[in-house]
Length: 303
Image: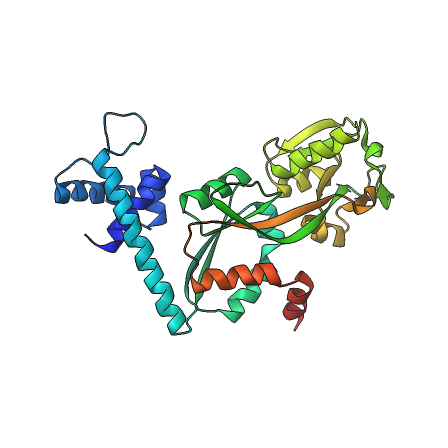
């Protein structure tokens, strides 16, 4: 048995999916199945209860998983200590992020980090918010980037920025000449919304509910890029993060109005599993996200 076999097996147990375990270890689904069969043959026992419809370990499989996990943690700790002794920051960081943060907030941080630590390979995957949490909890991502973070007993939440929620619309919309709007001004208006499970939609619904304002939802989308396409055809207005629409406003494709004198903010946070071993690369990335101001990053880019 090799250390990679241990990792593949633990990934299989934690994701309860042969396809996800295969993706995490860059092998085929068939290879994961073959590794499992080889492991059962090597230890001469069943590891997965195949009589169950859902993925379930046998008692022996549970014991193997617990032991393999301890071995992997020790192995990862050893690698971290060796890197620290050599003052090396290298390896791979897997990031799972919602579209709005990954496309509009992350790039300057990522560019600065890659310049400072060129030996680190960063991989970014764009996901729905609920799947970002799932990726981090199941170990398929080292770090997640989310808005309006939800507390979880297994997760560490690290705030790194806030964004202003604004009202965005087509330049030809009747409200387009306004510099600022009160939430009451949106009563009865055609509204383009995020889908109901998106955190920013939940926050928007709460804002409207507190003000006793009902809007007419004409479209619902699962990400900010499609919301903006709805705004461009003048289908209605939307409440969206200001940073996500900066390019369109610069090109006069869309306009924005401040909402209630900018009292509505969208907190952005980094999440990682509390039990995750933080390699030098992960610690360096977290420090970059947590301690660097966006204005400083923009100056670095200009330089």
